[in-house]
Length: 514
Image (cartoon, rainbow, N blue to C red; front, side, top):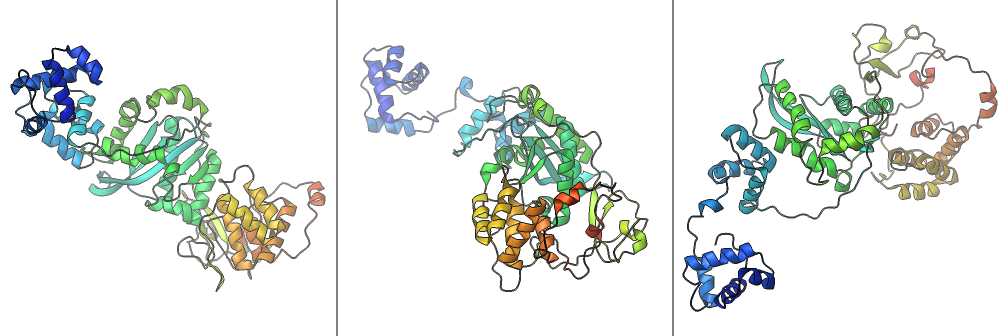
């Protein structure tokens, strides 16, 4: 009796009742088992000649149960048995049940159901149970992004095999997905993939959670100031918030953790060879719609496309008609007053913006090369702390930020309270960056800078940093009411000239909390 789960005493009790002439229905009801179990035990006992006569002793019955069974009857054999070796090989490679079923149907004409694959795998390789807690998300509220290695794929442009990366965006409510293979992790590709996913969904979620910190572009989106600036401008243009998912926080990324690159690699890509990148992406698009979109999701127990069509699509924000144009932020080696249309200040080095699609010609203000001139931390690009200053904690909750701000001073406490407001997680990193300024400029200066920023209603990290960098915290606060009463002349530039020509004596700084 292969796979027998009942203990010896239970089987012996069934046989004893059969010997006493009780019917199978009564035995099943009294012992709390199914009638099929009773019938199965009767057939097993009949094959071994113990259905009649004395009931075997427990030791003898245990010995009979331990005897290797003969061939299983044809009606009890799984339809997967003839392909068992291939199924086990795929399973060992990490290919999951859904993909195994599709591969058997495509390559061997398998006519069995997906359930037969699941039963076979449960019998030969039972899974290890895990305790999980599912967190519900409102429709249109959140999408989770995963980005990881997608295997080796032929590049049709270079006609050679290259390492590919797979981008996956999963809507947290409906679990509807978008996936695409690419060959690089540049910021231009990263943002284009987001736009492609939004166009696929026909709208924009309120928040995008980034997963997989091993991917270089995701790490850069968290730590590199230039990548951060481009990502945030793109997010502001399309109208969503970026929510980085920090390490060791699985509760933040459950939807894409099992439904992102993991699902795509093991179900959509595993066991398949593509002619080139385009062929792979055509397959992924069909898979997202026809397979992943139309199967019953194991967690929500609903069909993702149906939930998306009925509930989530209408809740997504409207996608801007014109795509956002990538701007690369670089540091100019030199600028002359004639490079700007109007320059009231002497020329100095300063950050400029240039279009990524530019031809490379033009004045120095649009074709400068990137030159790093700041003293930065090798990990985050933030200003290095003063010598001997203790390193601040890397990540703290809003309650810590409020408590630390109160220790710095009353103005700092009020400023952090205004900054966090009713969305503390959205501005948490800015608050942490402001508090780190106290390790560089001292707590009294930071409190005075916060008081000046409060007076003009500017609740930004960059405002406080600029005040401290130019030592403006001790100057009288300007009368903003009288200034606001003056008639406003139309601006000639999108940004003030001080953004491009800072004080030559001030140390240039960059920080990922800008």
